Length: 191
Image 1 (cartoon, rainbow, N blue to C red):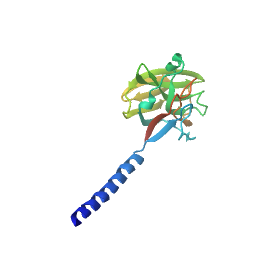
Image 2 (cartoon, rainbow, N blue to C red):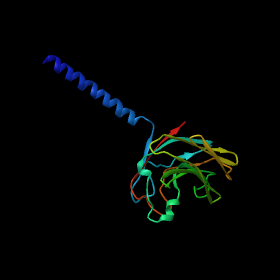
Image 3 (cartoon, helix red, strand yellow):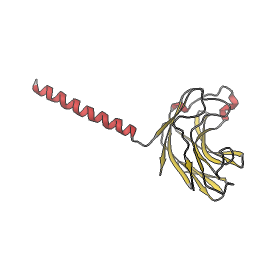
Image 4 (cartoon, helix red, strand yellow):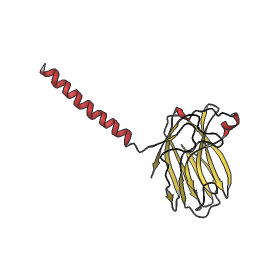
């Protein structure tokens, strides 16, 4: 009976520390989970972070199955939700900004370069990505252009700004519609 009790104590001991290590890994993996609530536009964990002399924003993102949605109005399925980026030129983001955008369309998750230059919005398809994968992204400022890269696919868009100062932009759902259900997006910045 002593052997079984000792064995049981060792099992409990190792189980306890194994669980702590797994829990620690989940907490310390560097990702922040942004939650857009059902019926909302804005994600939690968003805070005002001023950026000065930004030259590049690099991050890894993971979308899970909550990124799948069907818009109430079919034409809104083509709207682009916002993932991550920054305002530019010491202005509001609807004046000058660069972000990566996303949408669920044609049974795939599509990522876009999404910018404002002097209050004029434009966007360009980058590529489709898989759910539950770590997707490496960057937005780089190069004088008169933004360079967007998603898992090795790069596109360029014009930049009219003259000052690389602004603030960070976080996950946002919509245009016209609010999130039809809770959406979870995990993001880890790369320094």
